[in-house]
Image 1: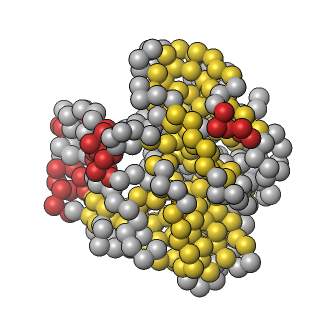
Image 2 (image 1 turned 60 degrees about the vertical axis):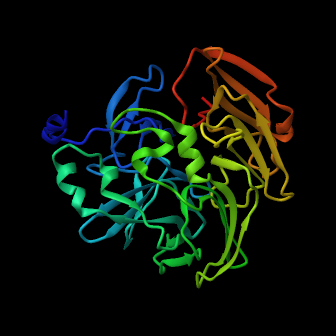
Length: 378
């Protein structure tokens, strides 16, 4: 098989992480690979979606952001140079017609990125530092090793947040004072010259080649020992001077193992009251996620709904009643119950989240885990 990998004329990817909708387009994506357009009625694959050529030849991340005030979709890509020890991050902004209106690049020492946030003035980029192992390049080139064998997280370096200017200003770096691995970003905004950022932070993390307990080589899946060894992500509030990058506060808001955060879809870059996410509530380890949670960033109140130890919950999606930041609306999640061989769509009243679902519908048998979600009103 490794010879077939080495002889492949192109890279191969599965667009399994996220589905997004913009400018009349529906598309699916993963990290570091092209987006693929989908027919909105049949879900038939239409081919590579390059946004009118702006993303031609590019390998964007699965995550996007929406600037509701400017009515723009924001996309990003990360390119790695193992020999130069750099990561180049590129951001694109698209108007309501899908036309590119801005492109910004930033180069830094090597790090990995999966998600990012925005403010009115910045792209907020979490820096999870890595070190490349050039000795594994021959095995990778011959198809005997996955790309994740080429690098590992570097616990000797500090994690950081980078504020990459959307308006041509300097990039500001916020040093977090210790190693940090951040895959997912919660609400971020500017307030009185300060960055207010919410992140889901790992204090330690193992190999990406065994992420979530899935061994790439053997295809074995054993998530409990993996999650036990990685400690789990927790919600942190980071406050920094947006002009100088000085770290003013970093607070762990909860000990709950929480990830896959979602919040008001029209309030990227604005203050948000509520964050919803998946949680691990298990006697041993924390993954797969078997609970859903709501955290109120104003009252610091946490509500947790526990499915059961045989269930896996998907990233929740918050469908607000209005543009207001009042926590009113609905929260949707797909929950797979392995004991009953069933997948259900659950709907929660966001204001009374801890009361449990107000509506449930069985949608099928054992569905694959729904990593990231979206909601299209049509």
